[in-house]
Image 1 (spheres, rainbow, N blue to C red):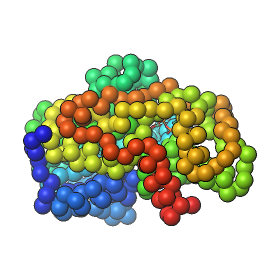
Image 2: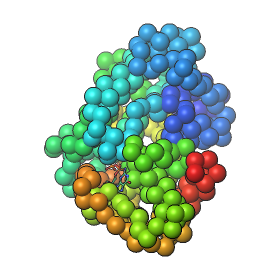
Image 3: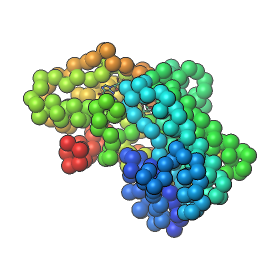
Image 4: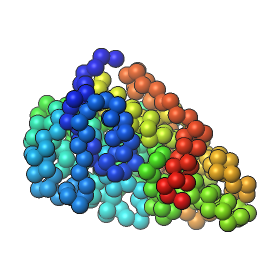
Length: 313
Ligand code: GFB
């Protein structure tokens, strides 16, 4: 693929640099020879339009990765709809509008695979967007992320901004959130299996029935794909970023138990929500743009468990 936009020597702002994706982008951008710009929420509150505008006018980045968002697993999304809708709308609207105002050359907006309808033919292609009702547990976050895609399209259409959108599948890896109430399934299972092993428990409890299927991508693969898209892609439609394979939650739990070395049984808690039955994305568009994932699930799980042991356990 031809390079449309080289990041070498560019001033690149990673919004959300302390999050799992933002931290992976900072690691990956170091290899691009970019000048990486970051700012903490104690200095700039991204929910405040005036603070975002003032900071962007001051530092004038050439490129922006919008990896800042309020994120969480199925229980957090279902429990705090106002926070997930309001905070994510404000962050994306403030950054995208100010990026246009200060003449940012290229911006990549990050969404999620939950933007697609609850029940849609799998694997899900980009054109499935807005073709059916959303999954109730995370429709708030999904609507905010769909609005972000639309904002990038609108600023491209009206102002000629080179703003693109990427929709990653469920991500995992270093710097993930391991809080059992607010985290996503994979870090939750790693922590649960580790603590069950420490306690000598007979079983590891998973939420829901264990039958839903989920696709996973290691966050370093995701960051690599996002840098690739920033470099070679410039168009209106968003691009799916996935690994192309999914597993049932029960199978995932069994694999995590193996990696962690937990010998017990897997028990289910059907009182917790299953969420969407499946959300495997079609990543053909990204493949056609010349990108493939490199980190398999077993290797990625082992890497993440090592990180957890050294940083979070
Ligand atoms: O990763 P997760 O929280 O979010 O849940 P989603 C995935 C599946 O794992 C659900 C099951 O079927 C859960 O019931 N699960 C089993 C668990 N045990 C656990 C556990 O201990 N913790 C958690 N969290 N899940 C999210 C969206 O949906 O996907 C976000 O809510 C975002 O907005 C993210 O889009 C990528 O995959 O269901």
